[in-house]
Length: 196
Image (tube, rainbow, N blue to C red; front, side):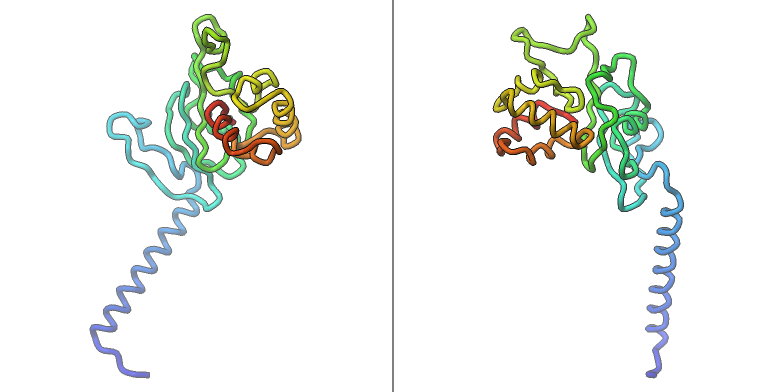
């Protein structure tokens, strides 16, 4: 074995120490669990733009917005449901229209969960023409609701309801591209009008 110079020994020693520190940090993060991607204290208000990032490779990152106590981006364990995301965001506010959201739907990584608000009078938001203005929840949509979307007729609407029921709900609007008769233009209309 060749003799190492003093400089080489110092370089190798520094590299070993750096590897040990990285390994210790990874072990500590692995054992920490819990809030691995949650906003810092204050829920984003007054300097709360810092994030604590750690967690497992199978975690989901979702954006919870609308009528929740602390809207923001949260990391949840794989297999979590929309209800878990709403609870992680501090729960629904008193103005939330939870009936419009499928709380049992599985979350998908990168999904946005929108909790709509009630309109004075208690009914869903509608325009003068009778069409619903906000996104329609895939979890509660009826054939009539889906039939209001451009490119969706009663037959395709029934196919969507049947597909949803067979799969125990839908985590993403993108899953609907598995239904025959739904092409790229229809998918764009669905993305604009639907939420999981």
